[in-house]
Image (cartoon, rainbow, N blue to C red; front, side, top):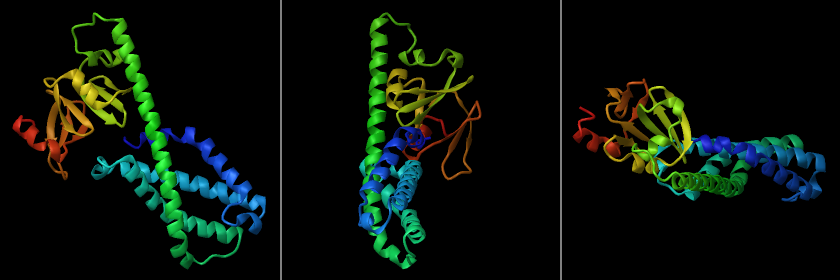
Length: 262
């Protein structure tokens, strides 16, 4: 679910994207001011702006699910996103230009694509940094709130700190933790819920004896594994609540030594 921040960012970004498209329509860049009327420029820039923006978010969500890109910087990931998004954007620009201004042959794509790729890469990097900044700010705010609560109620319970974060309706029968960017989905025998916390912070609070990390995005509690599915490309742990958890190559050997993959 690492695509969630890109989906959640749509309401915050939409007014800015629409406003920028309108400004471009009024100012008429790229020689469009003298070549077309304001009405045509509004249709052209609003349509292309919204399409490119949505395509950048879509490609970003897809790339976020590719395990090989997990260690890439946000700038590199979003630059690749922009380069890929420029492919359909080039086709859309040709079609819109042909509809609103004058017919444009598809052979012009060789000239249009490099310019479009540069612009979409810049847009994608700006969008990615915007989303990353908001996630960091939200995570910092949550950590500050939790720290304030911990300080106020100093003499805490004997249970590990993490269990105070679990919503009461989920009980205390912890089965697994799933990372969704800066969010953490808690799975128990009674259901699941999302909290704002990093997985590594949760593992620090839980300690090493309550379970094991089996994937960059997953932690599984001791005794929660029902069976192992070996038919897929990599082992998949089937938990007692029916949840299927992939085991990444990084963690297979430690899990095998611990007897989890026997």
